Amino acid sequence: MNTSAIFSIENKAQFDTLCLQVFRHQYVNNEVYRRFCNLLGISKKSVTNVSLIPHLPIEFFKKHPVVSTTKKAQIQFTSSGTTGQQTSKHHVWDIDLYRQSYTKGFEFFYSPISDYCVLALLPAYLEREGSSLVYMVDDFIKKSNHPQSGFYLNNLSSLVTTLKNLESKKQKTLLIGVSFALLDLAEQFQLELKHTTVIETGGMKGRRKEMIRQELHEQLKKGLGVSKIHSEYGMTELLSQAYSTGDGIFKCPPWMQITTRNTEDALQSVPVGKTGGINVIDLANWHSCSFIATQDLGKVFENRSFEILGRFDHSDIRGCNLMVF
Image 1 (cartoon, rainbow, N blue to C red):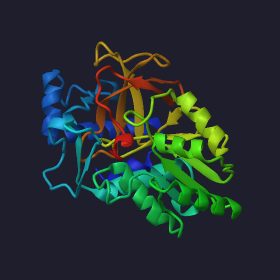
Image 2: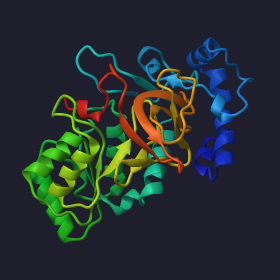
Image 3: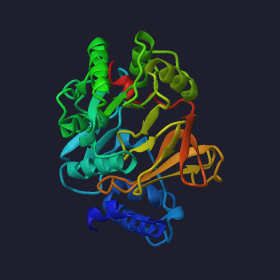
């Protein structure tokens, strides 16, 4: 299959057709995924529609190379973790496919990254080289081609000066960062950001007391002087991201889809609007596995938007909030 077809999807029929093609490809070429399917009694021929495609538990990325190619990976992304914690590894054979996915995904919801000055409250690329999020934002900074774009995690005063300067020029700005760092900024400085889109990327376990998304967003809106806080939903094991443009309701780009599963029976789906385990289809994961059962809990709505409500009990701490340790 020509992977360019992934980013040309216009309707559900095209998405479903590509899903089945990707499933067959990964069943044949991904040993870990094929063995998982076989243990469930599922074969390549038995899957005749998308609802029958099994989702690989995300924990497999911690213990096995989940790959659908024999070629050597161009880059390996690793999840964050505390000392002694086993981390996930995503072997990415085609880094250009990842670049296309995050660039086209961002532009699907916003506008070309070259329109923005990009300010990141994240570790710099050399500090956290294995992070897929940092790789993406580092590339956004370069593509923005703005002299003030950069990483500001450890220099809030400089960030505030830059933000005020950009605001005075009415420069379209993207401020993206880990939740606790954005909260530090909102508490220490009172800002009025009228030309800045604020995107938070995760929780605060290990650095601050955890709070529900609504409470976090209310504090950020008050301190940063914005009407909405945007959010990004992504992870090491995915090459695509979903975005919320406010209120914690996420939407996917056309090549990504969220469904929910029964928390007691992983092979059973749950109705729209009911809480379940989050399953992800990410067709950009052509060279690894596109069908993943995450440890997140959430709801999917009629229009295919979704909400993240929490995580399964005893799940490992996940997220870029740990990257600064």
